[in-house]
Image (tube, rainbow, N blue to C red; front, side):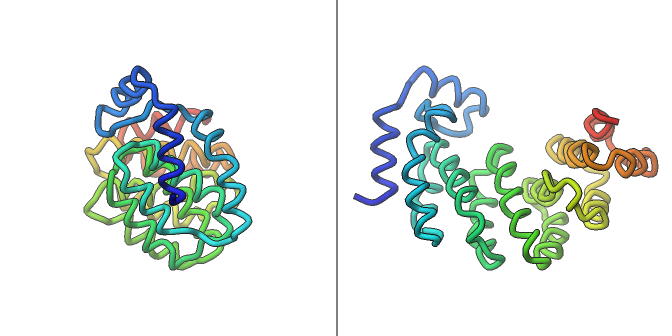
Length: 219
């Protein structure tokens, strides 16, 4: 039995129809669920991830199988796995990750794949140019990822890159873009309040009201 099949069997044993219905509703019924919540999911795969880390090699066939599964918990397994194995990810792996970015899109998947790519970017500056390109992609979820890929970097944030990406996305009427702009600024304001306050002041006429509200939360 493959690793994917083993986990699938464990998930099927823990399935909860009532929770599955509620979780699907929360995600606007875009995806099916087993009804396994985060703490239980992490407990199920804890020992598996420990074993995988000892191998020090990313199993892309396993991740592809998980991503292909119709249950959203398996996309969350991809998240857990990539976080556990992030020190072994390289720039060339982004081609594989991009396949996940461009499929089964919703905020929950984009908002963990962004930090995975952001982590790779701390080690390889080629990610900067890629994110500038993605910031102009026709797909707004890809743009959202670029906007937020530096989230959590704190004092390691490249403010020149952040500003370029945000400016490229001014004028959007897409909620998830304007929310992302505000989120990126709000996150960085925890580390550099003055820079964010100055940014909001300089671009006050171009920022969407939603972006300003989000950005100003800690100002």
